[in-house]
Length: 233
Image (cartoon, rainbow, N blue to C red; front, side, top):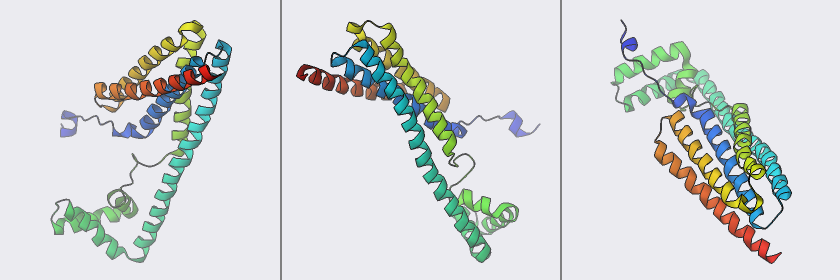
């Protein structure tokens, strides 16, 4: 039986693209919407005003996340495509130099020079651009930028995250809105941190503490600002 079957491996790095966008979108949805709700509620606004502000924040935030992710990841994709086009031209103009360049990369990793040149020759015979993209440029199937995937994932998870504190506005009494929204949002953030860490195979405790701390800080600051403006008005 092949050793691969005796020793199966399950790596999670293939999830890094959508997982980053999902965690960031959901985290922003909870933190920004909860902070907005807490800030407006601290200014002694009515429940209807708070709900309108929260819904507006959800829609604007989801669109902002989608646009921001699409633009930023598209910039990464454009850079990758430009590098690949440049590498294609170099492979066409000077294949011998590109072969030696690839071989030297393997030499620096610890492969014997003669073997490194043989490996480079065989890899370039099969897929020269693919070999240089992965080992020279650091571009692979896993790390390739996907703008549409990132935009849709961020927008969808932002909306889901923002819906959680919005639900508190509907079910919580107005005079308890600030503590209930804050407590529930911190619980949502802790759950998000744990789920994201589990999906990525990272430390659950560290991820949970990280997102909870920054969420609590954001809500505390907006509550203080809302209170100050409420007192002035």
